[in-house]
Length: 380
Ligand SMILES: Cc1cc2nc3c(=O)[nH]c(=O)nc-3n(C[C@H](O)[C@H](O)[C@H](O)COP(=O)(O)OP(=O)(O)OC[C@H]3O[C@@H](n4cnc5c(N)ncnc54)[C@H](O)[C@@H]3O)c2cc1C
Image (cartoon, protein in one colour):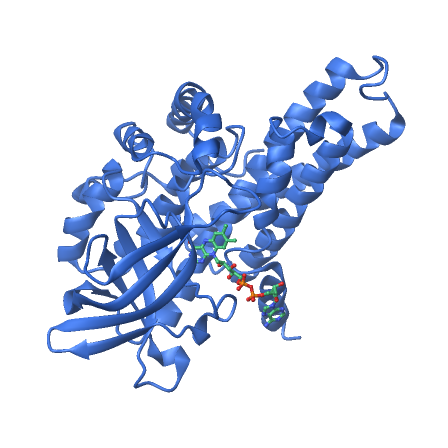
């Protein structure tokens, strides 16, 4: 029984994304990993094909698809010999802030460019001194006539170098209560006082441009504020749910990719001399990973169906985020063990995913924070 109601149109869309991934992503991965960035031209191709911001309505230049399309894009792009694609972050984590909270004028101004790939976005919350504790951010937003003046440093920002539009959280220094003092605004690349710092060299996800961002007496028009002033914390908590679901989609997709690859490797090599012993322990390891994956995919699809119905799935989303993030790391570790020394080769995607998946328990709210949320909602 299928949990998500996928139509022929969804299947056709998946085939298109997969063909694109095979023809225009996989052949470029080595280059992007070496250069540690995905060129803007690749974003534009994704836009031309209709693979960015799939849920944005035609009124703003989007195709107005359901969320299954977003799921398909993320699920296919994570299976391209690497995990580095910032586009699902742009489409389904950042742009939803604009789509839900921005004024009509801002939506008309920016959303068509987000859909076409002309505008790349970033969500800018983390600071050198504020990670899990979002309420403790110290970058400030102050009034000056019709303008807002922004000051502060942000770090570990996905799409930080490529971004043309930053969705940034600041605090109002005049408000003591941090839960009532955060606001979110849009800052365009090129605004005086908005500078991009260095690209961070990370353990994995080489092709994703993660960077620092700086705001020094940066002035933006007041109309660039999105949502209600002072309601930034609540807006972040609302949108973090879909971000956590995206992490689960990446995790389950990557685990599937790794397992399929490793089973193929096992079947081709087992029993042939030293490469992979046809041992019961290797078989059991593959069986356990396949079971993990089945549980993850089933849970994820049930959750996606509920998310699309608009149900409150905060507890389940937190469970899925921490469980699938740990599951894909178990799978990456288990697959590398089966590959043995071959899995240690830098060029092999198994070693690349072993590195790339290490981030999953950390971003979008660490797994400890997920457990805290669940404990609270269980009344513990
Ligand atoms: C590759 C990458 C991309 C990122 N992209 C973005 C982005 O686009 N935008 C953005 O704003 N940020 C981004 N981040 C930052 C990310 O959101 C933070 O790393 C994350 O919020 C955790 O914060 P931290 O790393 O400062 O860890 P900390 O909050 O310092 O936590 C350190 C450890 O302490 C634990 N801990 C913290 N608080 C508690 C608690 N109350 N109870 C129990 N344990 C606790 C944590 O679980 C963790 O194990 C990115 C990070 C990385 C590595």
